[in-house]
Image (cartoon, rainbow, N blue to C red; front, side, top):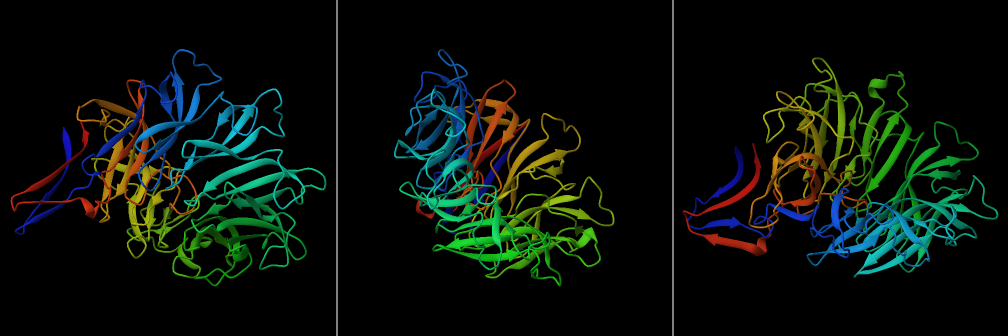
Length: 530
């Protein structure tokens, strides 16, 4: 048995060991199958991936079993509040603000104030396709309807007919992409972006409106992201005179009620002598900085040099990485960045998955994860390199992008290859500690103590889930917070499952310093693995 032990030994007259409440509890069990689901007479059967906020609380979809449970009431949303799990909404219950019942619930968002927001589908006698979708918000155990299909869309004379992905900031504001229906609505003006709080939802922009920084009009949008200052950012498509396939997309950011153009296809791409040919979705942080993947109008037509990542992290839009550039930590060059946006943290650092091409590079080592979190672009993990905490190698990385927190710690899902690796132990979750050391949090096939207390109850992990693709200031769900705490879901080979929060790479809190003698030793028992 291998035992991961963090050993701190004093060498001065007084040893100062940073022991926080998180260190005293390397793994916390939030919920476990077979236990009573609070707010019900049923027990948990399984779970969706948990969201984690900045103070270590989780929110998740749970699934139920037991007497009285049927397909009409078999799921719900639970959120931690003051150390306890509260049932926020349950399938089959009356949806606040309506006379209908919840039929389907989306994975919840959770902010640092403990506010839970989710979208849901309805069923009932008076429910139609025109009013069966809404967004609800919960705070202080009070669940309220935020907005419902069929209601008047602010800033228009039309009604909402559908909603895209919702984002939530720590001030309780949401931003959402909405579709419209009603008199005067057609394909040229049936979509918009709204931003607001529980008191009002205001129109940011709509199809058919002039796109700032251009003479064109908006033709469509991707779902927005939202920072804590209430700034929304999004990619928009354009239409109108002078618009062609070479200049019909851009990135806009909103602040103080005004939209500003960040980048547009056909405009010069910083760090190159070329122009943007295509622009992907964007992310944003609290400083209003954005980051995105784009492609270029390479004069030679070579695919090898036509994609890159740009970020405003340095104060202005700048190239971070590009196809054909030397990939740090390898002898190869970048050759693509997948289809996901990079992630951007609160200090303007980015992390992303990249692919490689070059002499000696093959399908077993042609992908990796890079970050600028330590001051310059650096390789964090590469396929073909040994995966920390194991004696095998990374094979690839999940399509889910990593999370990069404001302390420049990155967390991600990775796949494994090597001797004795099979479908029962080929995936894990890794995260950097505060000094940048990559640490294994959990691996399929490992033992996990699920007791949640002083006792020991080891189960073998069959599968893992983790919410990635965030910098924690973009309004999206995240499983890794600024304290270095990481939330994940696990199912076990005996059919049980649970929601857990790991503190293996959590940042100690200075207010909980403990002083011991010169011969003192601080021990933190972490993950056990056979």
